[in-house]
Length: 101
View 1: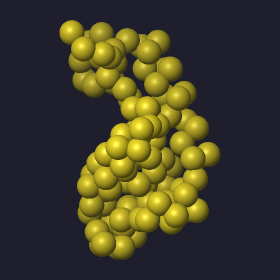
View 2: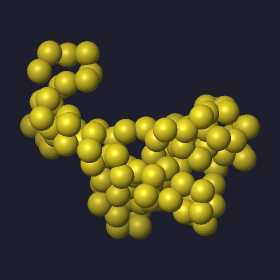
View 3: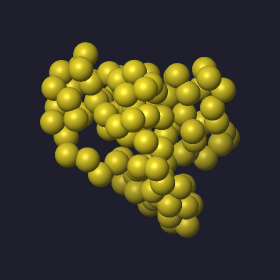
């Protein structure tokens, strides 16, 4: 089989409008991968983009430039992603997905 799935935490933010959050995440992920980021780094960029998006009303206002993203949702906000992944590793590959490990 393939590699184990990666798990990423959401950021602790107060959402205003969740419209476009998945699109923003996917845009961040693809942008990171096309820039040569590792999968984990690309996921972090996607999480940051999704977090930015839900703090705005509407999809267009929620899609940040890289400069906006770096200023408003800096990388330091995603430090918890590694902690969550380590916790998931301890619980097993299926933990947290409604399936018995």
